[in-house]
Length: 71
Image (tube, rainbow, N blue to C red):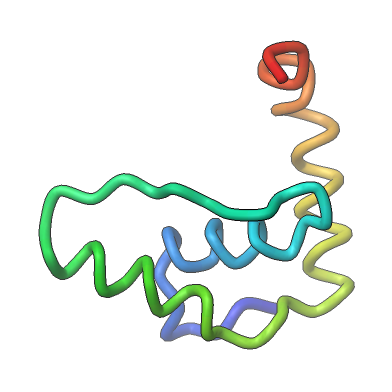
């Protein structure tokens, strides 16, 4: 479960930062508020394992075939 006060960007960044293959994330931002929101994602607590499993399933089912070959 994702806390209600997390933004979609924070959730996505937290998920990315929890991946062992990722050493850093470079998010985009147009407004200072977006930068502040993005920075806060690094200090959020880890996502629950069940949530991580659900995200992995979504990634494997819908995203991987579109992007993974570009790595």
